[in-house]
Image (cartoon, rainbow, N blue to C red; front, side):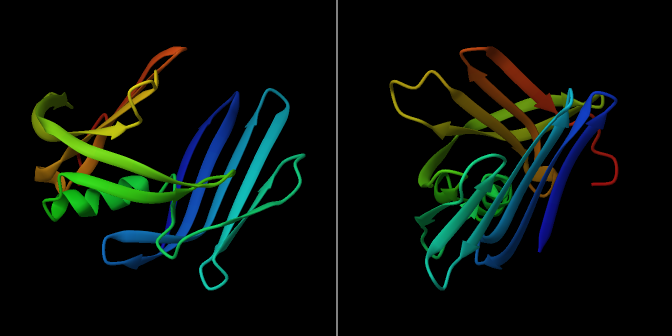
Length: 176
């Protein structure tokens, strides 16, 4: 499978791509790519996950290649929402995922905090709010809202950290 997310305007663009195989509810990544262009600069990162060898190879602009061990269920940052969507559909309330990024594989913990109603495109939508559990001392917080009535589509994401609060909300559910 392939999933790609792209945002573009006159200042630049960001594109993320993942290639993966489904194993039960885990999108097991084989490749993750990140590309950002803006203000005359380009940043590119590639992550190759070799399950048979149990190794990930991370390549970044102007950095040496980094290799590190991974498990056979490793996924990537972009595929996390797909795994959560599948787990929520199965009724799971607490999720643990092995996530590989450009530095290492880490265990991410998520839990459903409860239902919440959002307004999207003028319609009230019932959602399940999910929080990433980062530990007591972390100032960074991540929340995601998935809509069961729309096959658990991710409809809102909020990131809070030291530079403020960042909120992304789906503007329309047409076509879902």
